[in-house]
Each structure stands twice: as C-alpha cells, then as structure tokens.
Image (tube, rainbow, N blue to C red; front, top):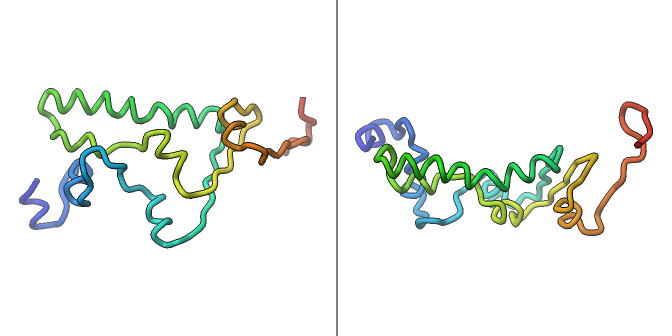
Length: 132
C-alpha cells in the first residue's frame, strides 16, 4: 500500500488510512461532505425523506460498521486505524452546522423533538387524497 501511495497517490482501501492522511487523532470525527460545505461557508439544507425510518438507520450505522470492522481488525485483516474510517455517530450527525428538514407522513417522537415548534402539517397529499 505504501508503495502504491508513493507512486500513484492512491491504493485499494486508501480510505482505511484516512486518519493518517488527514492528521486526525484516533476517535476524531471523520471528515464528511458536511465539512466541505462548512469550509465553503455555505448555508445548506439537508432533507431527510421518510425520516421516521432514516433517523433510526443513521443511529444504527456506527454500531454496525464498528462491529464489522472490529472483527476484521481482531483477525488481522485491517489495521486498527480502519476503525476511524466510519459513519458519523448519531450525535455527530445531528449536531452538524446545517438545517435539517425531516419529511414523514408518520413522524416519530425524535423528529418532533428535533423540529421543536417548526412543524408543517400537509393536509392534502400530492395524490389529491385528504390526509386520513
């Protein structure tokens, strides 16, 4: 991998070396597209469709990824630094400096809590049917 990185600037699985290439410390929040927008000083909106399903999936991504990679590290198939190439933890995701729009016909308590008083009720659906 080092030879490929030196000669071509890339290698298969280069994402597993992200911590070393970016100078982050072990366990630091990895860089994401959110950080690109923050650097560009842009205000942006993240639309989370079907948020009653999406948010629990975001919440579970870190644990699922960690479990899979920990096994690879334990058996020597990956270096421990591969654990730092990971999805955001839910708290890291939800506290990014952006605006979220949660879209759901059946919002869960979490969306309602995060939205506070900024809730819009769609009375008529795009199909023309009234909301039940």
